[in-house]
Image (cartoon, rainbow, N blue to C red; front, side, top):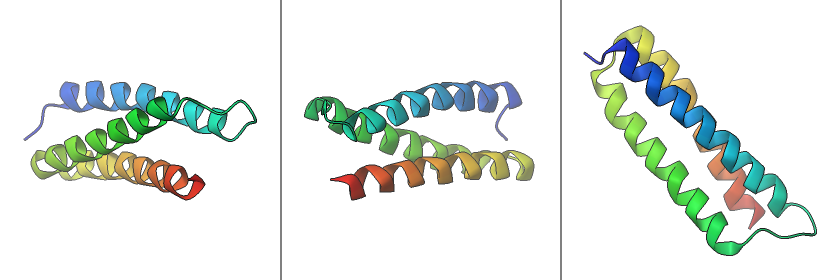
Length: 86
């Protein structure tokens, strides 16, 4: 079973990284295009977060699983937006 504090710490870290990814995505939509390497790095970070959540979900309680699954869905949606934008 995954410790509650660990899940909370991971979700807080991911929330911050998702906010940064959303900002990069928004910048890429403007005339001032974002640096391609930043965009690719952001996509890689999102995939890493998705993979880490997969691992956590396997050991989480049902309540934790639900919360982690919602976060994973949020990451997937952002990944899809970034892919479709290209």
